[in-house]
Length: 481
View 1: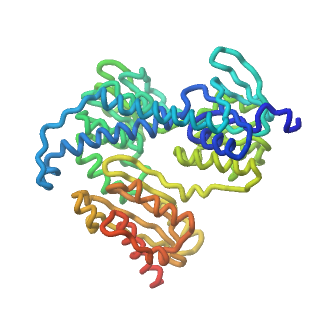
View 2 (view 1 turned 45 degrees about the vertical axis):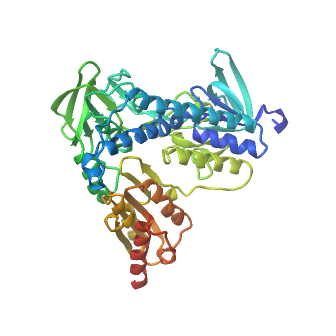
View 3 (view 1 turned 120 degrees about the horizontal axis):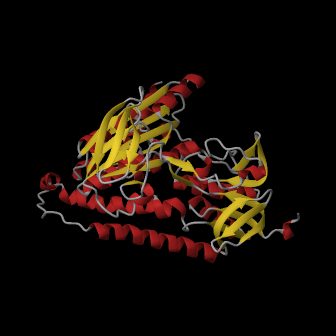
């Protein structure tokens, strides 16, 4: 089949951030592009994830700040009792979603991308089946096909959802009501962010974690200090080592909690609502992957470093996958980066992604962020490659800007090689941690030494000096070794 016989140069299945960036990047480089989407343009991040949740966090954060009379009094400020309107907070999030979705759609249209509404699937090499919303089914051809179908919330066995009293983050971002008492199953970033929202708006929260400690995916030192503010300092009852083995919707919602080791029921709860925040699973079931011989791992599509789909250990020609469906790093900005990398490789410009340099953030108040290796991973690498691992800690309580804001509860932990000074990872809890991590991520990408970084001048007084102090502490260890 020659190039002139294809309907499109590239067909992208899925219009989340991974698909959007791929389609836009391809069109900007002169390719004839179509993008297929069965739901709303923008995917999870725009419609049910990053965008609406950050709008809720912004609004509820204002409520929390204004309601903290003790904190305000330290500034000499006395505020009246805080009033808020749940519906207007929800509308703020919905309006933001609509605006971002419309802007994204217009951007693709201006770029010349053909938008196809319907369900896309593979129909063999360089073929995409499209079942349109009106039921019409047709086959399209493309020189290259990119799968970017994203992910959905994971609901463990034994938990029944009704979208009202037992729900996932998909429904939580709508903020249709405020339960007096809500149980949140899971203490990862999704659970923490919604606990932040609900407690700020006056809800009582019970947090249930299956692993042996709350916030198990975060650095232990960060967890220790962050949990004091984000959990112990709020109306949250945190339980770990327990599985929610049976959750029945209703009024009230009934929950059976079982010991994770013995699986024996140890406690029963009756709450007003349950948010299931137990992670996400890839959307790959309805893609007809068998037509290309693709075998998934727990639903995730295997890819190589260039984003080509791998079958039998070898990359396929002309079939690519990006975003959550690949399971690499289930973050919107990772998907976007993968999308542009896939297109660059399609254009013949060899590119790969260094996943270690991609930062992640949890937008609680204060925030948590990280990039690179955990301390445990860094220790394993140090043992394998026979180098000494350096670890330094920089505290917000020594930072003038944090003290001026009366927000000095924070910590930065920096991991590095003592031989070369190369940064291996960083973990931050504190005011604007999500912004601070980017500087470290950029340095990690460039494989810069902390010795060189320690010579860079940071603005005073700013929170960025927390990073500067860490670099200088690390540089001293490198120079002494």
